[in-house]
Image 1 (cartoon, rainbow, N blue to C red):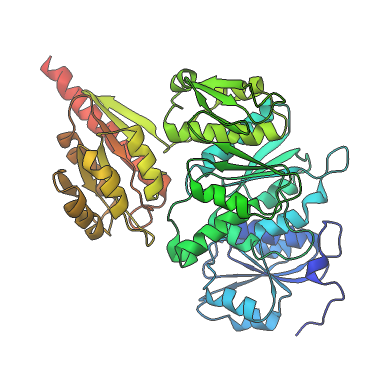
Image 2 (image 1 turned 60 degrees about the vertical axis):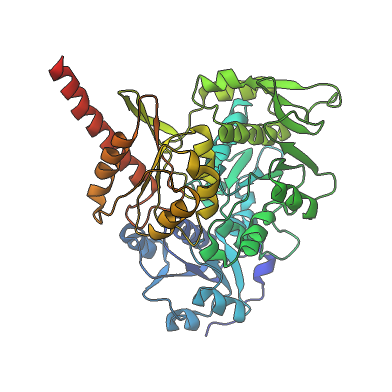
Length: 510
């Protein structure tokens, strides 16, 4: 067993601290795990990556970095990890609290960090002209995280700040803090998994964001967290130690309670948003105008116009849940000094990512919409509210979540339902109980290549002139597809193929 260092992991709160020789085990070798291993190797730590399966490209690079690799089953802590005697374990967010290696780490009293905590500890590698590291803005919620993260970063860039969307959105925050050009602000999307790890922090230098938001809360990832309460508690951690603005959803009482219960820095303000008329510390909508009544001196009697619903509609941004995301992002950007004009300019340029209420085709009076990113009931409910009476494509990997409430609330209004996925029985039963009059079709093809072609044929047969066919599965994709993007792309391809066949048939009959 290696000797004991004089410097404790808790004291390592700067890039320029003495990291040399620190024994760190990194769990997982995806994008996050590799960025952690790369960072720690650059710091001079002794690093062992432990993973069940290693991406070949990342595995090839580890020896170049001087990093060890253990690849194999992790149903018990492997002997190589135990013998390594790590002083710190940095876990990728895919490792749940009940994982055997995480349980062992905690039982041994080993410091347990996520990649976001590590990034916060070394955030001073590149600083601004005045010597301060970038401000951090934290964004979480069951739905809308990525859109709000992108929106906020765009608004800050429009305000002349060097800002980047990072974290769960795809770019590891560790890569951003090591960027030699540096940033004024990092807009960090956080999953509930990452927040669970952040909530394990101890010490005086725990992450303290400039501003934070939990957009909404609904059941999700219960198989990872183990309970609804554990999931909520993880999300609530986003507000801990916020310095300036705790932004919350006035229409979601859970987020208000999170702010009320949070331990924040003296002077931090609670800023509400929703689609109603705003109070004097809120953002909202008045007569079709998005307004700010929080960040102005005369907020008791005045409001500042940000944009209009009509302007947003012209760019496909007027769905109610998207407007709510825009208000949340505006509050975050305003807390860092972005003006209403700069926010308006950013919105003029902004477009939603693919697979988020994206129109992928229209023919014979039928509009086809890909919202494959709606991977849980809350997201699907928002999509169904935006497209009432749609032909609804639903199903997939349910992640321990019951869709009964969603079917009861929204299922009765759809034109028809087409159920996909390998876990169809519970969804079919929910329709039988709560929406028995709705025509229901099951797609039982096991082959990925066949699923969406059959879906589109069934949807086209059920739809009428003026209808929308909506892919909003309320479930994850991994039972039949590589990702939600793969699911959406296959849907769009099947739609294009169907339109091409029927458009050609129409022309030949002219």
